[in-house]
Image 1 (cartoon, rainbow, N blue to C red):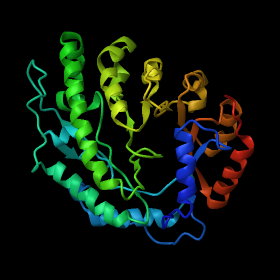
Image 2: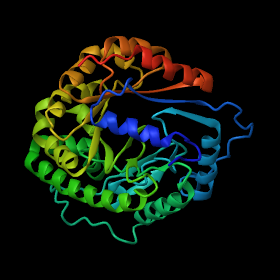
Image 3: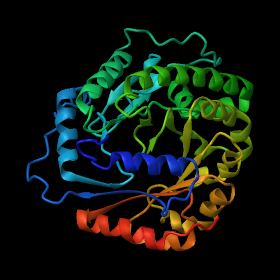
Image 4: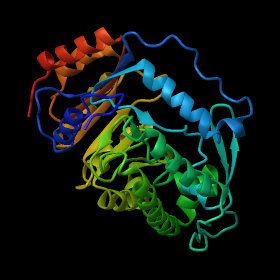
Length: 361
């Protein structure tokens, strides 16, 4: 089938499936967007001034998505994704009762697990929780708005480490890792079970819109149950502590999902790549140095380590770095996310990527 804003969607799905299977299909995976040729000259929808209204006004997000879709060329494996933003109001910590303070561009979670204990067994997602109800309603709204036009984001609702950090507070959790590591590990596994239940319910709404697959905040589509795993909190801990306390929950997440890419966010998290590469059910790693850091190509030893382990590799780089990347890395299992100024430049980059790509094993 095709999508209104992605007429080669069938072919893009086939190439994406080949990438997940670690097959070489003539070039690297390439997500390239640009301003569409003859894009309509129309002003961007104005966001409501009140942050609480902005992040809950689904009619505004429908207008915002359509404005983006009409103006954007989605080349290669890029696909239009319908979403209503990710300020933190749709995370598991909020579903479990943590208060969310919304700002113009993001949001903050207020911890609710105080005291000495880390018993999360008493936490439940109540059917009347504001953010749980909103997220389900938003997904159902998005399913109707996106059908036949775009894919629908499953969301960005946390994962290993970060959910507990939201519930407990990052500073307090750092002390817990030293004072009660066994409790932290047990809490992590319990929270991952909750995460899995949340994903099941969300995927039941989004799968039909996404041809049985999944997408989300991450620039990628995957067949079946796909999500980008992460533990940004791990930036602050040692490889041994990550392996002992958080890796079991990440492993459980990968065992549940059909396809998983791990979002290695920030150079401090590069210390955990060795442990992540040992997970048999983890198909891919994204290497993202972080704000203010050099290009991923500056960390070629880390990129090559991922490829040497037989894992797929995802990087986000400027268009001018695509050729250097393909000169140094194998196109097999490599996925590059980038953008160009014009549709013509994006189409030329796709053609050139086929010339530059090499299967280096």
